[in-house]
Image (cartoon, rainbow, N blue to C red; front, side, top):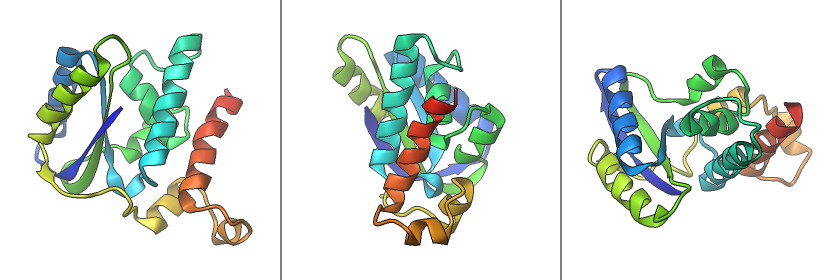
Length: 168
């Protein structure tokens, strides 16, 4: 798995997503873009990719497209329309793009796809700076829950990702 971080100024969402899809097809990788303000860190996306790949390996995937399955796990939701809130939208925003190729020559293909994706973004560090209120609300994490544990926000979000498997 590779991550590409940056800022995107998206004038036409359909064109942007189509370009990501083309990159994914060209390099045989799942390519999924996220609004970085909803991402609780690298571990959050690593967990989502791991769970999505496991679902495909077991034939338990909900989505036909691995990139969409990654989105579902990252969002901790089974409904695509609810998970899409974590995705990118038109306008300027911090973005992180997951690139995951599962089959042979994976690292080479991921690196090539990452290069193409980085051409679409203005380089910027976006991970590790989630919109905490946004993350709390999206993942339904209360201040009370956070105060009751020594776990970090990333750990609580990863727990939501893992719970999705149990809820199937």
